Amino acid sequence: MFSDRIGKIQKARLYALEPERFTVSGEAVIVRGDHGDYILTRQDGEWVCTCGYYRRHHWCAHTLAYEWYAGLRPGIL
Image 1: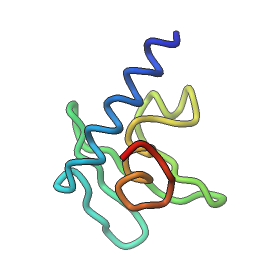
Image 2: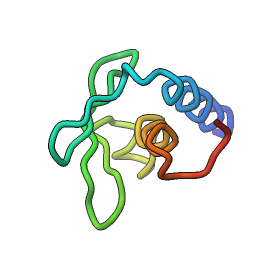
Image 3: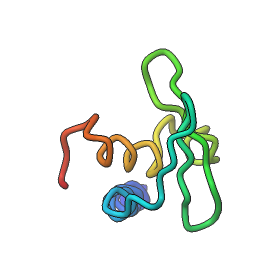
């Protein structure tokens, strides 16, 4: 279980360093993941993702990566 989370955090760090993965479109952000595109939207002040991992865990590599990329979350970058 923890290795799964570590893997998601590592993926997020790599994504955050690749600005071409992010497209801001109005109030949404499109994230080009390794397995397809995902859409981030704001709900109740939090980023929400269309990926399956987010639906199960309420966070994912895509939301974390965008927050690091956009400077919205202090982190390891």
